[in-house]
Amino acid sequence: MDKNISFVVLLAVAWLTFKLLRFGRRDKNLPPGPPTIPILGNVHLLPRKFPFLRFTEWAKEYGGIISLKVVNGTIVVLSDMRSITELLDDRSAELSSRPAFSGLDVVTGGKYFVTAPSASHFWKISRKVIQPMVSPQGVQKYFLIQDAETTQLLYDILHCPEEFYSHISPTTLSFITSIVFGKPTPRHDSPVATLFRDFILQFSKAFSPEAAPVDFVPVLKYIPERWAPWKKLWRDTRELQRSLYFGLLDDAEKRASSGIKQNTFVERIIERQAELGLDRETIAYICGVLLDGGSETTASHLKNLFLCLVKSPASLRKAQKEIDNVIGERRMPVPNDIHNLPYVQAVIKETHRLRPVAPTAVPHAPVNDCEYRGYTIPKGTPIFMNIWQIKDGVFHDPNIFERPEDFWPERYLLTPDGTKPGLPEGVGNIRSTLQFGSGKRLCPGMHLANTNSSLAIMRLLWAFDFAPMNESDRQPPTWDIENEYLDGITLTPKPFQCKITPRSKEKVEVIKECYERTVVLD
Ligand code: HEM
Image (cartoon, rainbow, N blue to C red):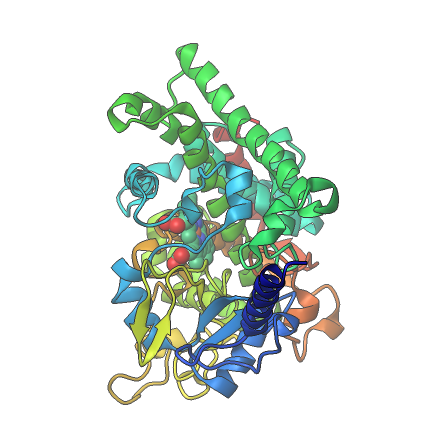
């Protein structure tokens, strides 16, 4: 070989080796974190399940803001209230974008506004069009649908109490499919409910921490499908998602063209289609996202709440006593009742604290390189907020919360944010919407979730007694995340059994009467 060519090749190899060896190394301007190894960085330490547990351990060791190296990329985790407030809330304009989600873009054709960049017209218009539906005033309009869905839930539990766990998800899904597409799906085995379950299962697999890290190792994107099983997973997920979204849209369009007016979200958006400049594809995805974001999250919250109450019979009795005093036997709770039930409100808040549905939320990303407390967080870095246990902050911190590992709703009767009374100025101050994310990305569905789940909770507590299946399960309760919880996008307990009995004959009669007058179509 020519001497000059040999020299160039040698230089190129040396340069590549130098570059490669730098992979995985933590730059000195990044926040601290666990020690790295060459090339991989911290990949070998990344948890496959329940990442918030490991993030919490690292927060105790390295501080409230840490970085993790994933090959040449970086992840930042915020585990203290101060950095969440100062970065994600106060500097929301700079930190409300999303990191790259290339796999998701393949699945959705880039039409998923949950992961769209904050500067994109698509994200802005999507948030704008859903606003009237999810605003505090907008959500008041759905009482008839909530009434029908929660009555159906009580009726199903009355007839099949042992299936309590499986009755919950169809209720929350049916509520969303009704308000968005005008299509109730209250049965566990209805075609839409079955398709939705299949899709969510596939979707969770495609985006679990075990899936291929294509955004950190971009070369993985170019591997042919026969050696890249994740690509088949993306393709299958795309098919399921499209058949769910477009199936519901087709049906809604058919009903509309045969003159049926249902006043649904999709009808209103189609009426404004030209004015908003939206094509049919975009409409299907904006509507479909609401199913994904709004159904299993609310169901997980309800499952968490009842699991906590089954383990805390004293809290259950206290909540029921309050409901009995305010509502009595002869009518079912209605949405406004929640304002007269401070203890039930405390139970709801305590469930969000002890078992947040999304303990690491959805990662944000800085629009440009971002300076903070002497660190530089590179543009596009995924930033997770870890609300599970925040150092010097929230949720499970013994300095801030009395008995943080206990389910103890009373804490929310002592102070509005449930923190210890008399904390020094500036300590505590937990934002009441923390479980719904932060800044401009704050969950748009939170009012919908709150009104919908509080009606279901009031009605279930009014109607039924809940107890452990076996006396031996009563005391002391275990609170075991790793064994009791499913591995998935939301923090959801595994199916659990409990003994459910109606609280009185009068209440059974009220449920039956309401069921007969509420028409539920499947
Ligand atoms: C208990 C129920 C719920 C919880 C705990 C929850 C939690 C969250 C969280 C943590 C985020 C990420 C926020 C961030 O990036 O900072 C989020 C985003 C989102 N949620 Fe919810 N959510 C719930 C219910 C709902 C409902 C009922 C809907 C809609 C009908 C909904 C629709 C969405 C959407 C569309 C986004 C993406 C927003 C964006 O990227 O701009 N969620 N939610």
